[in-house]
Length: 241
Image 1 (tube, rainbow, N blue to C red):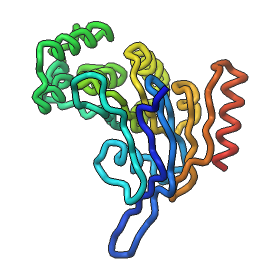
Image 2 (tube, rainbow, N blue to C red):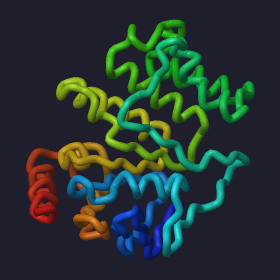
Image 3 (tube, rainbow, N blue to C red):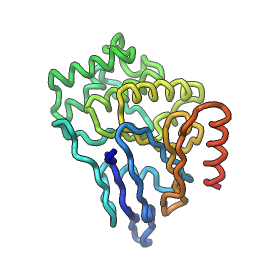
């Protein structure tokens, strides 16, 4: 199966008055359509910079990022879900989830119907007129995800999307979000510092080195039971030492 996304020998550095700081060094990997991949690595290794490169917010200094041309006639290649839900309190939940369509001038009958379907499917239809502060943390994250899915992105990037939640809510929400993404058959890349989260949610874990980041190892998650999870956890933690 052809990769939907491939990185080939990517390099990137930050430049300031003190000189050059290499952040990514000769990084290569591929993402298959419909896969759920996580990226872990030491704090400050360049994970968020990598997502900025994938979103085309910044350009690599060398190397190639290839995204397979879309099969459908739309141009929303990447969806980006941030650490905070960034819902606007002065807008209703319905207006919040419609925001991306408004900004991109894509409020077509088809897209509006899709948003309404998502709200109904994921138990937010009864909260269309509510304000964000009236929803639980988990419901807010679902609303933020629906806002991202509304543009029908080919690839969804998740940047530590549960880090602002308390531990118990985090466990509930990540299971909820994972279920939604698999049901919608999305290609997903999750950046997280939480090894257990990477193992619980994704099919493959890419382990990055300290900055400047390069791919250190890939771990395929082939089973999810207590013994297997512990084995994967120990393997990844050992690599990150």
